[in-house]
Length: 279
Ligand SMILES: [Zn+2]
Image (cartoon, rainbow, N blue to C red; front, top):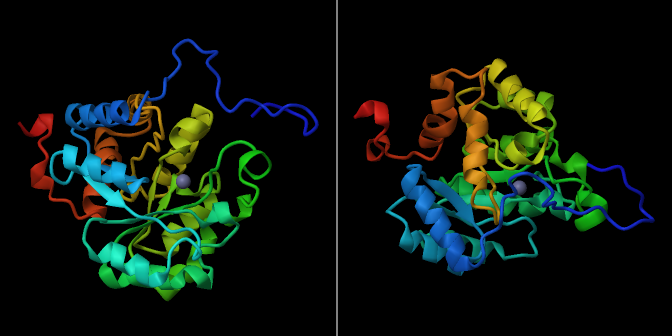
C-alpha cells in the first residue's frame, strides 16, 4: 500500500523486486498441469470457478470429485433467472460461487439478486459470496464501482433471514471487518468463512491476527482454507504454509481449517481421503 498521489503514475500492482518472486503460469495448459500436480501431491480438492471451457477441462483431468465447479452471478444483468436455473440443473456445477456484487456496487441483500439465491436454496447448493478484501486502491485504480462498505458482513443479514435454508460461506472472511464477521457468525449458526485471498495479500502479522481472532471467538470449526491463487500456482504452497506454521493453532485446529470443516460444509465423503496418520 504505497503512499501515492492521484496526479502521478499509478503504483505498480506487482513487483519482482523480491528474493523469490512467484511466477504466473505460462499458458492454460501449464496452469492445468500445475494445478493437477498439486491436487495429487497435496491430496487437494478445489472449489474452482471461471471460464466454463477451462473448468470442464479441469474436471476431466482431475480424479473424480477433486474439482468442485462453481458458477457465480454478481449482477442480474449477467444472466436471466431461468438461464441460471438451467445452468445449475444440468448437474455440472456444484456450488454457486463466486458471487461478488461488491465489485458492482451492489449489496448481497439487493432484491435483484434474490431470485438467484432462492434457486440455490431450493436446490440445496452451497453459495460463496465475496465480502471484504479487494486489494489496494480497488475503487480508484481498477474497479470504479467497488465500495469497501459493501463488503460489510452485516449486509448478509437480510439475505440470510430471507433464505433460512441457504448454505453460505463468506469468501475472504469479510476481511478486514473481523468484528462484524464474528457477530454475523454468532447470530447465524450455518455461516462458514474461507480465508482465501486475504491469506496472501496483506501483511502476514495482520493475516494471523485475523484468523486467530476468529478462532479465539470460537469459530475454529467454521473456517475453511482457501487460496484464490489466480494465476500463480505456487501460491498454494506459500499460503498453506501460513496455516501449517501458525503457532497459535493446534494440530487439530489446522486439520479443521485445511480439511475437516470443508469436508463437512461441502458434504464430502471423508472415506475417500487417506491421511498419513490414518495409514
Ligand atoms: Zn473474491
